[in-house]
Length: 208
Image (cartoon, rainbow, N blue to C red; front, side, top):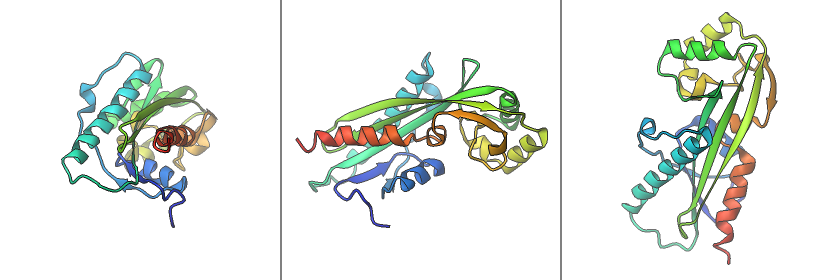
């Protein structure tokens, strides 16, 4: 599929399959780069501040990596997208579970309850150096999640690789979701509307 945005290059600073799919669904062609940062070393009191700090740290790491490579003499701007997501449950931030037991405990807690995701996006225009960032929050309410469903999710293993072991788009979990106040793409890690807005903002300065 030919990109509908041919006037700039795009880099997704993430190895997330979900974010890759969302950006593809938005009609973009892009290259992938991942940031090697110690996420646990970055701590903030508020989840909104934490995800912003993590997304910007990822962006900084990729920018540094790109600066060690050959300089691009093209006039075409290059846009870098970095992002981060945490789950907030009872005012506690949940990142990726550290064990099977923790993942199981997380999912059990959602049953007949509710949680929230906080996602950040940091978009950098590598030609001008301009960066714009933002945060999106989604509230998720659940019906009962059967133990059998939880064990199948644990056995499959994908829940161990995502913040809060939360996968509302998963076929096993979807029937257990009562209500989502927000968008599924934001829960999956890349809010489309916010991402589009930030891309436009960093490109606007290029055309002046």
